[in-house]
Image (tube, rainbow, N blue to C red; front, side):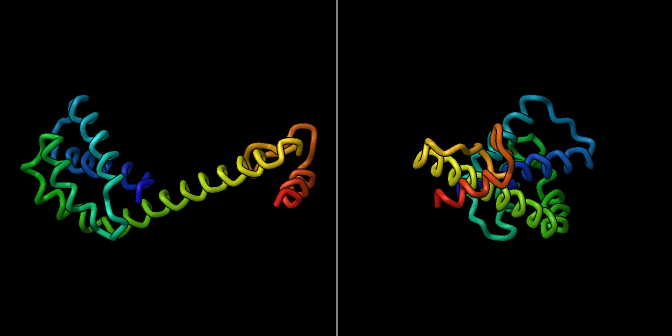
Amino acid sequence: AINMDGTALGFPIMIGLIAQLNDEPLDFGKIIIVLILSIVISVGTAPIPNVGMVYLTMLFEAAGIGHLAGEGIATLFVLDWLVDRIETTVNVTSDQYVAKMTDVLDLRRDNPKKKTCCWCCMVPPGGDQTEYEQTETEMM
């Protein structure tokens, strides 16, 4: 559960939403602290639904709006079922993209003489998509 991009993006948005709903200003330093903590927290968060709500109390304190933690978590808990699905979509999509990049780069390393492009959806220079598909199939 190291690559949790959706979670890292979701925490600052949640903190910002609650701060805006309550007219609480967040200065640049607090925003940076929340961003850094969100990245660190997302590395250690278990991929279990609603588990991020536990970490939000710490982020509320780090943002200087700890007095809104109870109300904020209650508000966010209503929306969390939808936010979890969006975060999961971001996590899975980024994992698939990295897996495909790794696969293609590994194929290029094994067969450097073959004319291939770097990514799955680009046409190789001087060729068409059918040549790329044949080259990728031959390399497998």
